[in-house]
Image 1: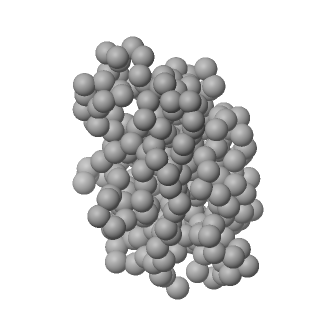
Image 2: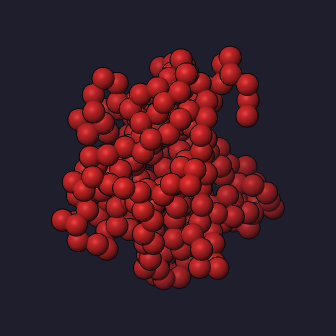
Image 3: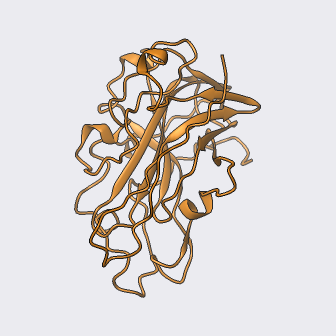
Length: 264
């Protein structure tokens, strides 16, 4: 059963700058997914859990709050809180796009990334998300200057203010070997100085296709473990110095898995 259900998320104002003394947050989360013309409903923390958990249409791991994860060592940085697994999978062929659907995302600053983890010979519901080997397949950060505070980030471009959802399309690597996978979307907001906000959500995929590739060990990360609290691009004050115009997205390189397949 594939449906789309809007998730209208509560929001306030965005913290205006480094001198603000009151922390005012605009949180959110991933509401739905689409592959081709088919929409798959995500978990809605505003709907009673008993109406969602265990339902045959559920493809997303549970997340009970629109609040962020603040620590890189928090176990919930993998798939949010509590991250309980769904019973179903989104079917997708390697090389197809999966689009994450967000309603009213307000934060403007910070990188976005998408990760996969193979479930191996297990059902993904049996996999410990903190022990899985996650590999990054997509990322986007600062798009143009003049600096980190005033530049345009993909996160800003991703916002949509006309009542329609923000759409985040990502292609599953075309030569990825078939199997059961978890997909992890993460938004890292860094608009508050030295207080990063992580917004992760995970869903389950059944990937088909003729691919044979899988990333080598150097691409595989664990959550927690992929990020360091000492990373200057995680604990960062984007407002000082004013001329700062370079940003390195945390988590290592992207694995594209294109090998002997043509780039599309």
